[in-house]
Length: 103
Image (cartoon, rainbow, N blue to C red; front, side, top):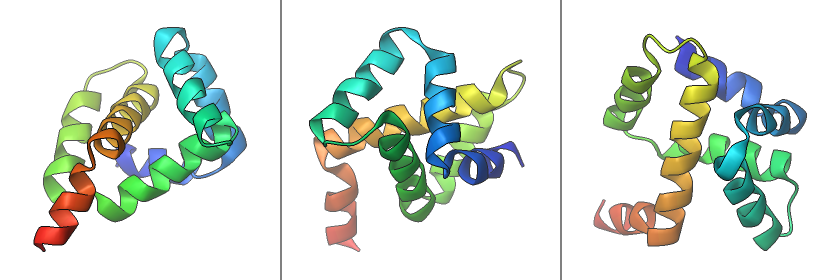
């Protein structure tokens, strides 16, 4: 499954950093700002977020990422973008923390 390919490849900081650079644009700039804010490299920040997604994501989250990757010529980069956007938004809103408190 392509989603697990993201987890395996982007768990490595150098691969993760190269993937974010490949996506580029405002997205990469946003990731860099967030990484800088945490005192991490883009690769370390990205690999950490991907690992956290693998631990925190619900089955619905997994299906959503897979659906958004389906048919995309650059499916792995597309999936990474979805995962990172989700994690950065959830970290900012604290939604994973709130859902963990309800469990």
